[in-house]
Length: 168
Image 1 (cartoon, rainbow, N blue to C red):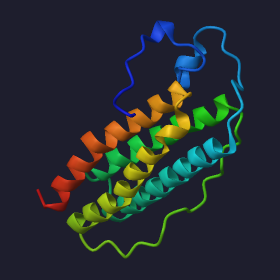
Image 2 (image 1 turned 180 degrees about the horizontal axis):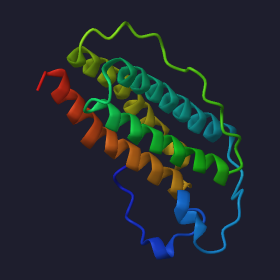
Image 3 (image 1 turned 90 degrees about the vertical axis):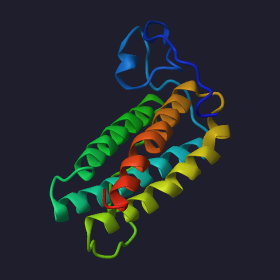
């Protein structure tokens, strides 16, 4: 479902299709619609996973400094959190508070080992998102968010982390 979404011209986005600042165009009022309990649970779980990834990248940057690729992955994850919080706002769902949702990780002994840990943290999130697709069949905006995030992990995060894990 993720790559099947067609690009929608920004000028023609409706309330059910817009994301973030795109929703400032036109006369769109929030909350847009009710979300089912399974939908609420799914976006909450995804936001909590993003919080965990952000906490991991924060910790890595804290240990190794603003080193490529971690500082860039941290900033990208922060933007994804902001965008997903916009989905919560749009549907009137309370945004969960960021707590330390990071599962315990061993101390980072090397940059290359840390890259592998980051891969291990991103991969389950990638497969989890694929399973959630059917929940959001009638929500083109949420499908677009998932599609963007899925594509970013596949084409940007994982390749740079895999290269890093190989010590290149």
